Amino acid sequence: MEQRITDDTALPALTAGVFFHHLPGGHHASPYTADIFAGFYSFKSHRPVHWIQCDTEHLEDYIRTNRLDGAVIVSPNFTDNDAVLSRVRDTGLPVVLVNHDASHLGIPSVRSDNTSALTELARHLVVTLKVKHAAFVGYSLRFYDAVERLSAFRKALSDFGGSLFDDDVLFTEGDTAKLIEWLNRVVRPDSRPRALVVNTEFIVRQTMIWTRESRIRVPADIYIAGFDDPVVYELNEPTITAIKQPLVELGTTAAQMLLSRMEHPDAKLFDIVLENKIIYRTSLPLGHQ
Image (cartoon, rainbow, N blue to C red):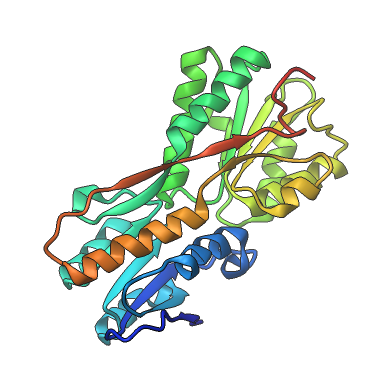
């Protein structure tokens, strides 16, 4: 699938691919993808750039056919990320990553600051809400930001006196049945975790359906927080607390970085980390319930 965005100026045009991994649930139409790509729409450059939205499945095909002047890769999820990214780097194609740290490969990135936001959330859970036992669910450990989020949340909980046990961590790999089985096993009345941090909007929706069907009350029985902040979080009952990434700014910054790299391939680019923001709502409130 290709979607072209063109800045109409008199300078020679460049063509850049914006690569997303296709997740279950229609990732190309997801709020995460739409908001990041909106950053490319809003980027104002001094020369025309054709931004082509496409799937990471075809990344190396695009590069082999010399169709691109540069590429932005969003949240790469290859079986071996380092191997694929090294091959892309070695072609000499200018590349910028979004929400993935490959500084050890010499590839620049723009990322959101998961560590600070999850440290704040853990402090609030343990210190303010007196939560001692939490759980975490995500999509895949192949995503850098999922690993970073789990590590940051686990460390912060421990630092403040809470706990996140191995049995209370799940990566679904897109398997809804696996999620439901885990929820039935882990979120038990006798020893359920008091809070659940969910790594993707799609899994938040599946989890909220399960809580209603299982008569688990949110937030009375369990607190829930999700990443990003799609409109559905505000429309849900209860409304969903969000760890909001600056998705549009991630896209705009990546566009600016890649244009600089395409025009000045020998220039040094540094990684950029943008601040996340927690928006407290009913599912995990700012104060006691």
